[in-house]
Length: 186
Image (cartoon, rainbow, N blue to C red; front, side, top):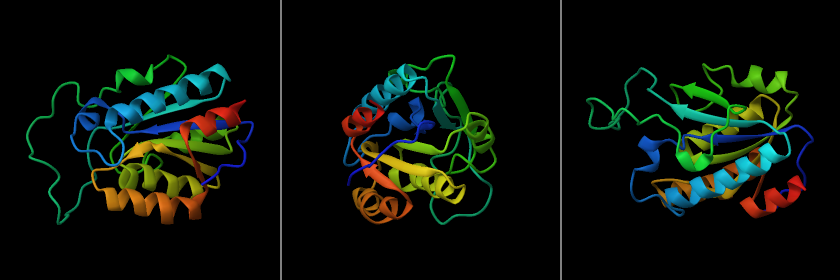
């Protein structure tokens, strides 16, 4: 686990750190409060360097049958998709709203990043094995260099988190801690 460098045009992509998700209890191995705080520190550091910050939120789900329940059904709380306040959202941030696990499919994320000359993404968020992993895979497939801040991602399933961090992310890019990535920003 060691990120070697950040490209001059690197964007931070924060996945699904919104009220409805950060309120879900039992995140493993990091608490939601911890990943929001670390993601917020990364966002502030990226903004200070004039680099893009992308805040991704999910407001629905893809159609289709699944064996696992998608929740209890019914109405979601009014603030469910509101971004976590600890991210310090700024007017300059790019906000992407998605309906599926990954932040690229069905959104203009790739177009917005390319317009800004971005060649690398740093990922944080929840859940490690779902939204973050799907976004990392798509970023890799789109030709971006990928770095995951492993102490700024969490999951409801610790073994799924561990699999993504130890087996998947190293095949898609590099991993490191929030502090190490901030240090690479210089």
